Image (cartoon, rainbow, N blue to C red):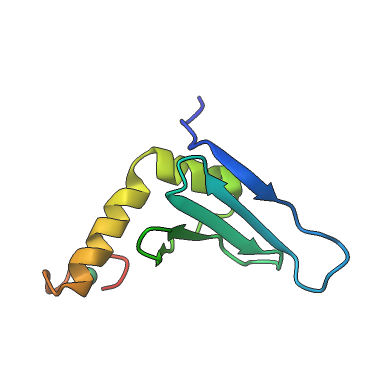
Length: 98
Ligand SMILES: [Zn+2]
């Protein structure tokens, strides 16, 4: 079974020439970007570009990032983080910032 994936463009592959090797991609609608430094055990950072908020799904692959956005989970986490920053909840188990 295949999960739906958010379409991306501008995928940058790590170059072997520099010391810092960084993967990055942006969804075709420009809303989300995915970045990862090419170091063992480094998770991907998923950024909501209009707000600059980084949600941390701790996923291991670009495919996981795209599924995370396509499933609506990234949007839900973003909304929880925004509610958290507005002080709208005391403690929410599903909130990445609590
Ligand atoms: Zn919270």
